[in-house]
Image (cartoon, helix red, strand yellow):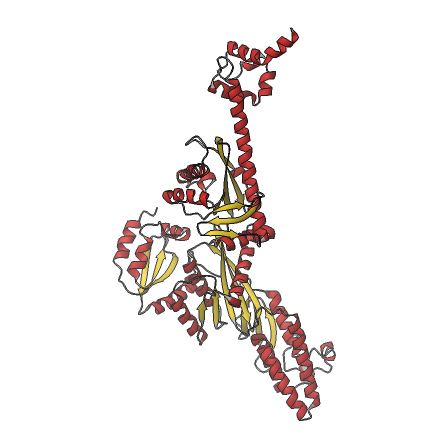
Amino acid sequence: MNPKLKLLREKAMRLPLTPGVYIMKNKSGDIIYIGKAKALKNRVSQYFGSDHNHSIKVRRMVENVDDFDYILVGSEFEALVLECSLIKLHNPKYNILLKDDKGYSYIRVAGEEWPVISAVLQKADDGAEYIGPYMSSASVRKTVDEANSVFHLPTCGKTFPCRTQRPCLNYYIKLCDAPCSGKITQAEYKKNADAALEFIRGGSREMLARLNREMTEAAERLEFERAAKLRDRIRSIEKINEKQVVVTEKDADCDVFAIADGPDKSCLNVLRFRKGRLVDGEYFYFESDTPQEARRELITSYYSIREDLPGEIFTDGDVADAALLEQWLGEKRGKRVYLSVPKRGEKLRLVEMCRKNASEKLFQRQGRVSKDNAALEELRELLGLKQYPDYIESYDISHTAGSDNVAGMVVFKNGKPFKSAYRKFAVRGFVGQDDYRSMAEVLERRFTEYLKQKDSGEGFGRLPDLILLDGGVGQVNAVRPVLDRLGINVPLFGMVKDDRHRTRAITGEGGEIEINSKRSAFTLVSSLQNEVHRFSVGYHHQKHTKSTFRVELTEIEGIGEKKAAALIKRFKTIRAIRAASVDELCEAEGISEKLARNIYDFYHAEEEEYED
């Protein structure tokens, strides 16, 4: 805990209830976090009060705060603008930061009268125009190559104007208009270069319509050579379009943001659509935070280092200060920007596609295979979970007419059995047959241990992402009060079987959820249900066998429950006890030579009678 917490809270309580930006600093005076507030006193004092509702990232930040400064502004919007500016200037450790330049590609346009278009990996302060950044360098190179090819622009690296006697091969195969040999005027070249940039920035649909009009007009004026050039250009663009994948039928420009949450890291995926086509995709890893605030920080950080803003931005959930963000983005773009969370239709499909990409990147980072990813993704969607169920605990009860009542707990980690975390429970709270009461007792014991060991973060000290009980809504209703009483907030569902003892559905307090249509999730849940059943039944058979052994051993004179248990512990089976000599029987705890003789005689009496 931060030793200065009390002093920091007292300072925070003296702040005014006005908009502003607060700047958190560590002992060295370094800025570690910058935030904005509608009312400084209320917002800053929250950091230094109870940390019960704080995310892990905020707790770490507060532990390192030694002091803070603040700047008053006139409105919450001004606070947002100032916050973005200061974050970009100082790059604080605990703000969600998205890197600029490194790892990105740009389209470079050099020269005013004779523009040359090329793909580069870094910006340079050379007076050239840069379009980007883009995540995919391969996509940038392909776009530049297509634009230069369609509009016959040079790629030789020469500086224009220049004059050579003969053009290169590209001229003869109709890939370049040879400005180096005077085959094209400067005005015509500039027009082609402008058209290439229009093609890069705006796509091809509007350009194709314009080129078709120009071709028709040229033919009507009997300019057949120009009309033929325009026809060839149209065909080249159409050929490129055939290779492109149309993602949405509408000609909309939009960016889509989605987050996949992991246990320690989350992944942001951004898909950028222009004229209905996916033109770029980016992903970033960051420490998990509250979703609404994380989306706000991510969006402001993303567009702080980019100029190309669309008219619509879709997200997979609510965004903190959405109205302020829309205002800031609109001023940055020069036009209205709409920020929304799609609920249905094609926009929702784009968000789901973006979220699945984020999940895949997160899974790859964790070293998982695609088959497991699909199962966990489907299960998350089916159950409406906020994050992927990487760590699933499942429970089942087993007994014989109420005797030797036991439970098994199995764990699936990253979609696979995690056998070192399996646990066995002997039901002790009552005698008889009551599956609901048994399940409640087992879950209470398990999570009571969690409260004792939670600082370790391992074994019982780790919370699962999902609990699945082998049983229906009755099991769920029996366990829910236990979790509520202990303050355990973990998704809880039951696994329902059909008449043939096969997995049929998942049930919760809201009713049954059919899973047959989701093949990957169905396979995962079936495997889990079969595994927990096998494990609990195996433990019951083991315990029941020992119980039967104990009953048989207590028939021997001088052997009670404790001594019977000691014999089973030492020899494991009745066969081993029957085969043991008197001296070997004495090795068991509490077994004297006299008792050993009684045991030996009990199992060998029939043999002696037969020999007689």
